[in-house]
Length: 361
Ligand SMILES: CC(C)(COP(=O)(O)OP(=O)(O)OC[C@H]1O[C@@H](n2cnc3c(N)ncnc32)[C@H](O)[C@@H]1OP(=O)(O)O)[C@@H](O)C(=O)NCCC(=O)NCCSC(=O)C[C@](C)(O)C(=O)O
Ligand SMILES: [Mg+2]
Image 1 (tube, rainbow, N blue to C red):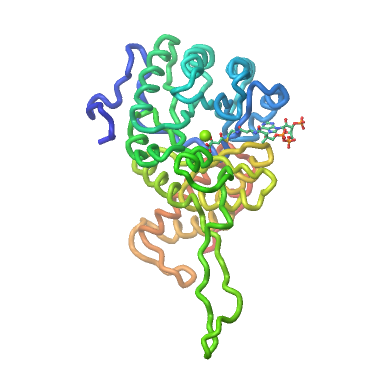
Image 2 (cartoon, rainbow, N blue to C red):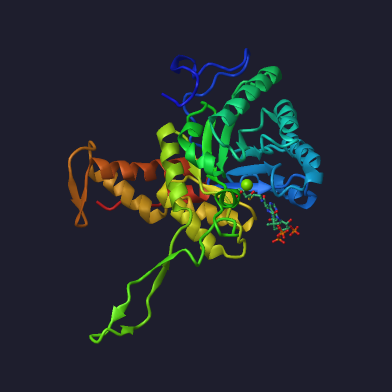
């Protein structure tokens, strides 16, 4: 039963007369990189039409990183870009302003009638609990009905307050519109009074140190190695479980050190391995990193297909290269194989690589 104040029988009913019927299953559309742009920045906005097809999601950002004086220009700029662009296979998302801001009502009442037919997902920042999703849910239903839209716009919540993290399960289950969650590491760090000033990523002070090695007379010898730990592991892991439980999708979020491509790739890969389906890209050069990391490697797909072939009807246990494979490891492999199929359907280069795989007997 979803954690909603609505009863199970009403959960999938439209919240306004004439609004589109909610989806019972959130489509698994590839979204390795959600690329942020500021629609009020003319130089940036001019690049967007040419980016269609090169990135899974283009997101017109209206919230933080857009100057207060530019809020209206950003909203109007997004409408102009959306109306004038054929997005083909690329999804169009937006991040609206926070629900307590002076801009959000106009964001929603402008965007849904003007470009609601093109918007796939609305990202809501600073979500605290199910009540925030319920508010957006009803308002969107009213606006969709008025605009005559025939498919519901989905909602994505950013987890960037301690209360949001504490309520993560109820947020994911608050509405059939819920598409996924992203980590908002900057606001979340501030809200929790964490002592990092970075936007995502690790911190050299957050580490464990190897025990000292002592000589026979008790003197400490040699260096004690330190290992940097991941500040975000706990939150990402909670997000992954909450999303999986509700059939929606978790994403890493922003990595603010644009120059450090290696650390960016590491953070993205940790999130991919833990179960996230994608991340954000703040600068064009982060798109390639995200696409690389969130696409299973040829080696992984080769192994996964080999296990699928060896497991026949999917039951029992077999030995492959000295390792046991069974019903459960088959399921792990099917996660990879299905993701590869979804990605191959929209990425011709990956399709070529996956099609060329020969599965050894
Ligand atoms: C970081 C910045 C300032 C560096 O911008 P720059 O112009 O200094 O960089 P550049 O390397 O000089 O740019 C090279 C070229 O790429 C263009 N460009 C640059 N970026 C983009 C882009 N995104 N999309 C399309 N084009 C872009 C740029 O206009 C330039 O074009 P040019 O060669 O013709 O001169 C810039 O990339 C930017 O503003 N990115 C988006 C930032 C953003 O959206 N931040 C908000 C999300 S993170 C967040 O909100 C936190 C969170 C979740 O809420 C929480 O943790 O709490
Ligand atoms: Mg934020």
